[in-house]
Image (cartoon, rainbow, N blue to C red):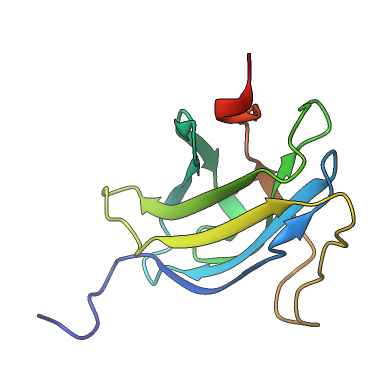
Length: 144
């Protein structure tokens, strides 16, 4: 097995608050690099205990960030009802034009009405929007 495979996107840093209030916008920060500069899309998979996986969401990587990506994805939870004390996990992978995939990274999330969303480490990421995670959350197994 090769230590460093060339041409494959690599997620070098990632951060997201593990708790937010229901209705907040959850920011998921990532930094990634691809020596060939052909990162194409971010594949987002959300799974929730009692409900299972949601449909996969794809976020197109802006042309200007296909070699060095730094910014945040966001999930708007304002239209979702009944999420208090719900937990979920977001997994992201980056795919390049040739179909090569980065290693996946996972982010746990808990909805807590008293939570304060944490900020990423200062200077670790650009405060630049990469795109929305277009998934409509539901409360899962407790739904009627």
